[in-house]
Length: 69
Image (cartoon, rainbow, N blue to C red; front, side, top):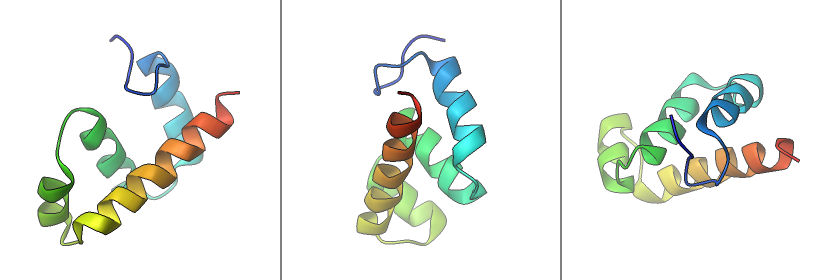
């Protein structure tokens, strides 16, 4: 599966996301962003602002990084 933009094995990112990102919508946004979706595309899909999508992605990314140590 390769590495994510987090420089962690994708399998570890998936495992940590399943354990630490409890909100299903936020988890979807996180993975879709990792796969290359833009903030604007995700904002439209989830009826959120692009800024809120950025915040959600950053929060999820920080959780993954924090718990990967």
